Image 1 (spheres, rainbow, N blue to C red):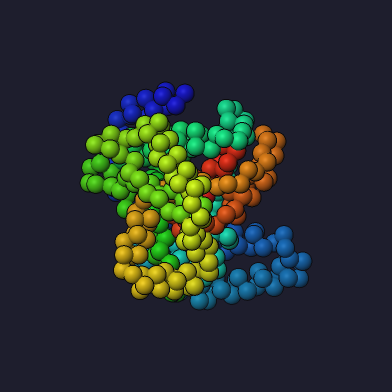
Image 2: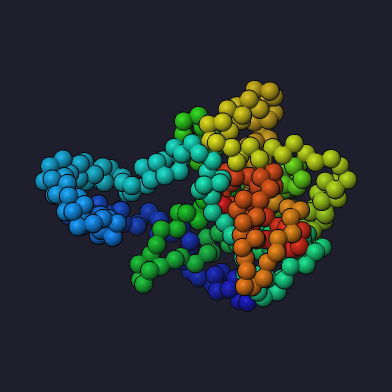
Length: 329
């Protein structure tokens, strides 16, 4: 099935990002439509008196300052293709000071246990190398712009978010975080190709490419086995990754402290930031069945903070019994 899907993707004459520059700008919805939707949204939560009072406030807004504010939105939309994007990104994500790893990140297990990979101790590395290899193949397709363009009917959808899947990381700031993406298509130039592996509080890196070719599953297996054996034979590391689960301003302060201690730490942090994605080897063995993903989901989202980099766009957590879960910023 995977090979067939790959052939379908590769046979397409369209390039993944070829329509990005020709997509229409985000329209500003009419003020009356926005206000009507707002009233529909609050109506179930209000009694008749409260709803009538809300309608009066909305009407006053529509006939007053609302017109002026709506005109400002229209002016903003003339200067930007997406008048909302920066506001949404900043207010909903980058300005937050709470622990975004706990409160905002998303994730969850894949349905592998229902088809081919039931929980089984001793399969962590075997399954991890296969999963990683398939993820790398998808990265390779994306770099070659052979991932099929998504559509709604005949309308082409924006594919820009696919650029944020790999080589992307959030950087903590004292008052506002920033987002850095190092992904490039083949036509755009060189792209980082290394992976970060977190295991028992330690951080490892290896390149997924060798002499222009992607590592094979057995080659990935050898890398992971080396990491696992080393971690099992030595004391646990300091668990640097756990700092990413902190409150955002505190994490920014700690990051600056690490850089102040030794400028080499900035180079190491940037290596993590630039990586394709993060692989976490977790010692937990969550109960999981096709009917019950509860514990696997819980540990995927809120498990050992030392084996996940909360600011990376994509972490893949592999547990000791061969189950796995995605964890994404």
